[in-house]
Image (cartoon, rainbow, N blue to C red; front, side, top):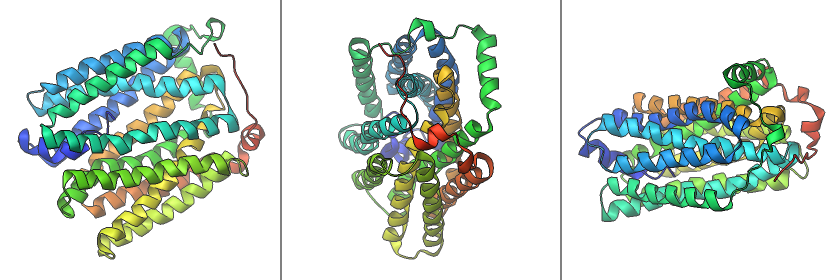
Length: 388
């Protein structure tokens, strides 16, 4: 919701703060950078002191940043506060992933991540719709009031209902040296590194859509803020539906096979999107249909790539999840302004979407090589870790 709720207001912020579209998109980039850096810090911390405390602190930072966004006087201040929002949200992103790995591995992890994507995927549907509704009654600043309320609710729910999943005996207390050693170990694992790059490139296609869609559909195709929210919701429905289809597919095929097939299909749909955007064939439908199909393939890739990567490093789940998330959001942070630099057109968005999906295919087959994945990950044997 932090990322998506203010998307309908990007054109309004551009006018209100008397700046450019590309500059406003940098506030989205700042959020993604905050998410990337925050995960690198919070992941190892959660391995050392447990999951709950870093999560509570991070969401608390998010609350403070959201309140200050309401009164931000200019774009520079808003951009800085969006970085802080990202840092706070990073705690939720990395700790949630680490908790999954605390409890499950392989097939079971992929299945649970697919179910979690149903919950996570509701936000992209609701967030722009809520943002558009808020803009109907107030200014873009009201969006950050709503984010403040949501963050307070999450903070309260976490404090009351979320148990600690990392027992004291499994915590890693190596300090800075131990953290650097853990990161070094991760970087020596070619398959793990390849998988997180694959996940990041697929993520970049998603964020090219997230950052460019408001300008493409509102300015190029003349949609209102609420019409854009409905279109954005349609893409999110495809994304969510694919994550739930993944649960059924996992009954017959391994996460690696599903990932490979989804990426190939996504690259093909991305190229089709580029063709229709460049030629204008099909008008609005020519953009929406291949775009939504790409999002569906991303929905199949998103649960499986992380599950395969994290299954390799259960002993440092927080650190492994942190590096995964940091690379994902870091690449996403590059994709967001790239769409703006290329012109915020449907063609610009299509170039980045197609490039991300095609790059993911190349990395999967040249670096990861699905046939070389460990047998226990391919067969999807569930492994239950200690839980409290």
